[in-house]
Length: 192
Image 1: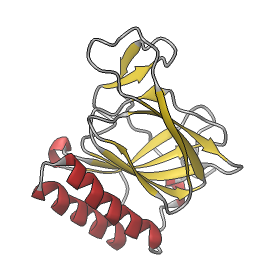
Image 2 (image 1 turned 30 degrees about the horizontal axis):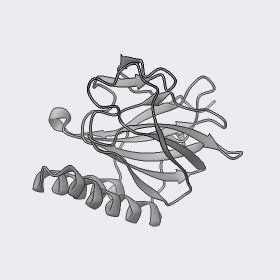
Image 3 (image 1 turned 120 degrees about the horizontal axis):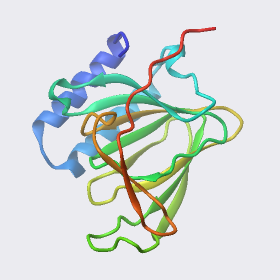
Image 4 (image 1 turned 135 degrees about the vertical axis):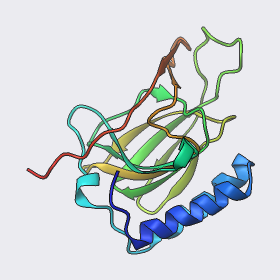
């Protein structure tokens, strides 16, 4: 994880207060989205090493993991043209665009017993710097995202668990087949 400066520590403290005040994930995501919007609208700057993409795949840099893995904060970076598989999070989440742009493809979350059916696409959005979205709640949790434009996309994401350590679903949108995975965390590369 990174050294936390004053602005990021204040954000972490505010999110901790929200998470500690209610278990209603819709209330949590609404309030965390407001906090993340304010952080992105301030002069806060991620360290350069946390904005570097990988040529192989998108990367998840941990900024903070709450004690007991109750929630986590990450810098997520996609290189130009990279796209995630269709996936779920198994927890609530809020994402804000720090730089670049992201195209999100949303799908209806399959109901129990619906395996083996193609996923239903329910929307598409382009998110740009400073914009914040509730990317997931446990009842609305399936999407794919891609970096669009000619620069890498960097997002700041807040999740209701240690997102790098929990079991999550990846979906084949054509068949509905599910594969479980753990995304893990990446370590920033030294400047070269």
